[in-house]
Length: 154
Image (cartoon, rainbow, N blue to C red; front, side):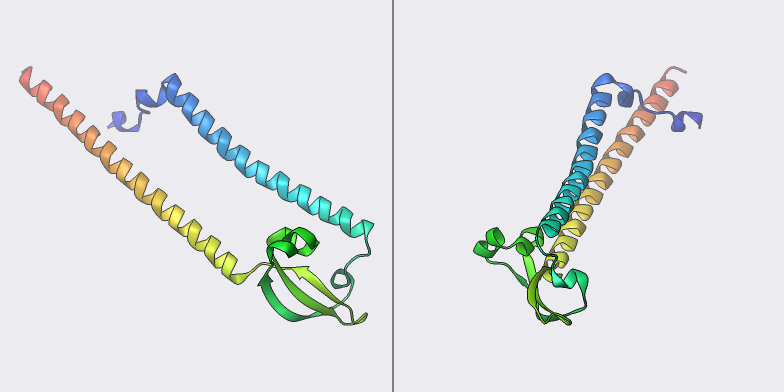
C-alpha cells in the first residue's frame, strides 16, 4: 500500500519539471502583470483627476440620469470615462447641478465574462477528468501486468 503514495518517476524528469516551471511562471506573470496594469491605469486616472478639476461625482452626491451604455468608437478614444471599461453612465451632481459621464461596468459585460469563465472551468474540469481516467487505466494495466508476471514466475 505504501507504493500508492509515491510520486511517479515521470514527474521528476527534468523535462517535466521545466515544463511545470514554465507553465506556472507564465500563469504568475499573467496574473501579476494584470495586477500591475490595473495599478498603472488607476495611477494614471488619479493623476489625470488631479491635473484637471475633479469630477463632481467624486466630491458630491449624484443621481444617475442615463443607465450604463456602451461607448461608441469615437467616444472610446475621446472621453476618459469611456477608456476605462468601454461603458459610461450620465450622472447629475446634486450640489453643482453639473452633468458628467462616469465609467461603469455593464451587467451584460459582467454576465458574458462570468459565462466565459464558467465554460473555461467546465472545459478544464472535463479535460482533467479524462486525463485522470486515462492515467488510472494505465496504472491499473501496469499493476495487472506486474501481478501476471509475478504469477508466471511461480
